[in-house]
Figure 1 (cartoon, rainbow, N blue to C red):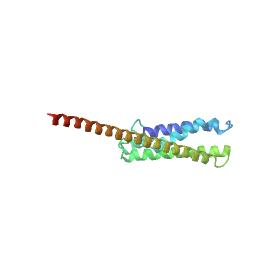
Figure 2: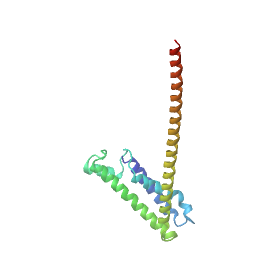
Figure 3: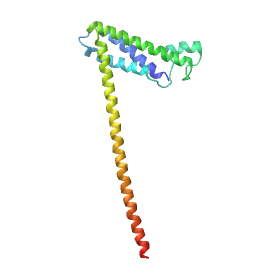
Figure 4: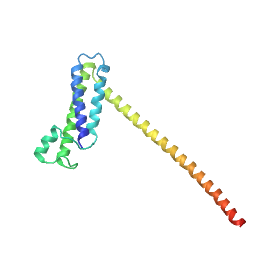
Length: 166
C-alpha cells in the first residue's frame, strides 16, 4: 500500500536536492524544469494510494513501535502514509520558497496553478475520448444488431416460404 508513497517521497526528496543545488545557478525555471516535473510527480504519488511493498524509514520505525504496517487499516499504515505526505508537502513548500526567492513572489504558485490546469485539461480530454469511443461502440452495436435482425427476418421469411410451398 505504501510503495507508491515511498516512490513518491524518493522522487520528491531527490528532486528537492537537485533543485536546491541548481537554483542559484539556474538562469530560468526551464533549467530546473525536469526536477520540477519529478517533484510534482512524486507529490502526486504521495497523495495517491498504492500497493504494498518494502519498508521505508517511517514504516520501520512505526513497525517497531506499534506492530504490523502491512494491513491497510492498521494504525501503522495510516501513520506511515500521513508522515510521508507531510514530508512531501514540506519539501514542496520549501521548493516553493526557493523558487519564489529566486524568481519573485508567486512564481511557484503560478507553476502549481498551470500544472493543475494542464492535468485537468488532460483528464477532461481523456474523458472526452473515452466518451467518443463508447458512442462509436454503441453505434457499431446498433448497426450490427440491425443487420442481425434484418438477416434473421430474411432467413425466417425464406424458411417460412419453403415451409408453405411443401
